[in-house]
Image (tube, rainbow, N blue to C red):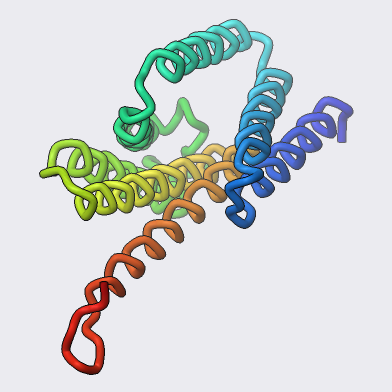
Length: 225
């Protein structure tokens, strides 16, 4: 194994550890440390992706990362805090839609992604299952994000519902990224997408159960406050 591959694997492992620490038990007094850990994990993952990329594609990858980081910084600093959940929902929907388009591109042009079998046409069964999983979860993430953005009436209960839908959209988007990462055999994206997908889906389930318990009636027939 070459030194380049070893360095990339170390970067992936470090980014996975930082993402895991950012998703650890919620404690408000150390929330800033969690944010810093997540930011550092994203930075390490980006550096590992650039370091392990082919020299031919390096300018495009570096340029895309720079544009995306600049756009995210401008939006985060210019948008009011009340609008951040909506902005995050839009991003989750955009990720799901992009994963759907990537899965369709892989299905329509499998030769460009190295998915052709040794003999015969089309794609392998394993690749086809991953393409279907990435497309389905990506489409669901986009649909849930659209519902979260446009189907709201205002009020505390509606805000809690939108938060649950945001977590669900993020979890589905992470699952879509994971499926596509397995298809492309990219270990770093598998770890990052798996953590994001698991965290988002578990958070949405917990929020859904929490909202359900609030409406449960007591033994005397009076609903819980």
